Length: 272
Length: 354
Image 1: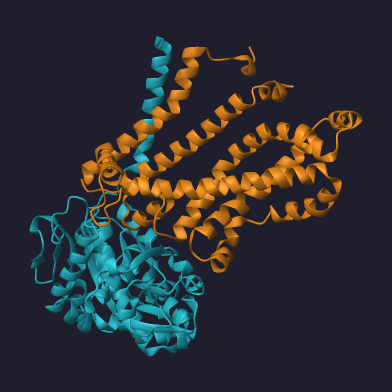
Image 2: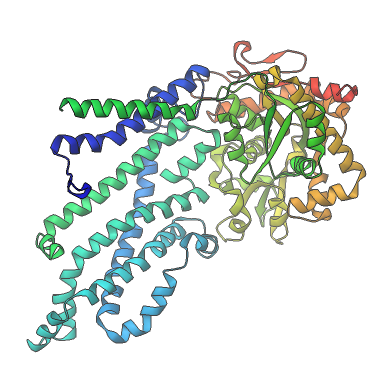
C-alpha cells in the first residue's frame, strides 16, 4: 500500500492528535521536576502549582498596588487594540480591495503602490510610527493596520479577479450598472473570502501587537510578558503565552463559525 | 482506545521524556571551562577590551583553565542566561543580582565590585527644571530597572510617592526617540541615552544618581557553588580585571578601544566615566565593599524590591533574601543567603597573591 493511502481510523486520528501535546507536557514536567529538585526556587521551568498560583495572583485577586485584576486588564487592553485594528484593516481591505480588483482604472493607479508598500516590513516602521503618532494606542493600532491591511487588500483584489468573467458579463447584459455589480455580485462573494484572509492574518496581528506593547505600554498581554521577563517570572509568562494562544485559537474558531453560519453556500463554492 | 494505540502513546511519551535531559541544570563541580557574559555599559567595557587584547587568555592560561567571554546586546537576557545556568558569571548591578538570580534561588557572589553609578542614571524633564514638577506627569522608564529605583528615591527626596506619577514601561532602545515625541515629558534612564536626550535644548536634568552614591553598584558576579569548587576561576577574574584597570589608566589605546566598542569617542566615553565611580585599584574596591555604608544601601535596595514584589511572591519582608557581607554579617534571613559580597579575590589582587 502506498503511504498516501494509509489513513488512520477514528481512534488513531485522536491518538495521533493528542500525542504531540502529551509529549510536550511530559517533557516539560520532567524537565521542571529535575530543575526544581536541584533548586526549589528555580524560575526557568516552574511546576504547575507555581503557575496556578501565579494565575491566581494575576487573574483572581486584585493587584495590591493598583486594585485592578491585572490579567483581565491586560487582556481587555490588548483585545481592544487588536480588534479595533482588525476592524479597520478589514474595512479598508473590503473597500480598497474590491475597487482595485473591479475597476481597471483604480487597479492601474493603486495596484502597484499597494504591492510595493505591502513589502515594507512593518516592524521596521515602528520607530517612525512612534515618533509621528506618539507612544500611545494610536501608534500600536497603526502598526497592526499597516501590517495586515495591505496584505488583505491584495488578497481581496486577487479574489475579485478570480471571479468568473462570465458572471460580470452576464450581469452587464442584464443591465446592471458598475455600482450594482460591485454591491450585488462582487461584494457578497467577497465577504466569506475575506473571512478566510482575516483568519490567516490573525497570527501577524498578534505578533505586531505584542511587539508594539513590548516597546512602550502600561498594560497589555505583551507588555506584561516583557515586563516580568525582567525577573525571569516564567510562572507568569507561560500561562500568558497559553492564554494568548487560546484567545487566538478562539478568534479563529469564531470566524470559521461565522463563515459557516452566515455564508452556508460558501463551502460548496470553495469545493468547486 | 485500543491496545496498540495506548502502547504507541506510552512509547512516544517515553521518548519525549528522554529529550528532557536537555533541560537539566548545570552541576557545579571542579571543572576547566568557564563562561562569562557581559553587556555594553561604561563600567563593563573593560571585559571586552580584556578579551580582545588577550588579557583573559593570559590569566586563564596561568590557572590552566579556559574562559569564554560572551558579549550580550541585551542586558536582561544575559542575566537570564546566567540564572538558567548557561553561564558561570555575569556583569550586573546589585539590584538585578537580588531580583533575578538571587530571587530565583541561584546563590550568587560578587567577585568584583567594579564601580558605582555617580550620575550615570538620571531623571530628565522636558521644559521643567525642578524635580517637584514631576508630580502628575507620565514618566517613561524601563520598569523594575535601576531607573525605576532612582525614580523611587528621587520621589522620596521631595516627599512624593510613586502614585503621584504615572509610570510607562519603555524599552531603553527606544528611549531617545520616545523623548522626541510631544507626549513624552519625563524620562528616567541611563547614559549614554541621558547624554543623547540632554542634547535637545528643552531637556533638563533634575535628579541623578550622584544624589544616591553607592546604591547602584556594578558587579562581576559568579555562581557561588561554581566559585567554591573552583577558586581559580575567581582569581582569574580578579587578575583580568585589575590588569585591565591598569591598562585603562595608563594606556591611551585602551580607552580608545573601549570608547569605540561602546559606540562613542574618547570624549563621550570620558563623559560617562566622569559620572561613574570606578574603583581603579583593589584597595579602593575593598574599602567600599567592607565599609559600613554598603549594608545600609543594600537594605534600601532590598526594601524597594520588596515593595515591588520582586523578591518572590512568598517574600514576607525586605530581608527575605539574605545578603552576606565580607565580614560574614548578614542582612535579612540567615537561612536564605543568596547574594554575597566577597572581598577574597579582590584582596588577593591587592596583596599580589594571584
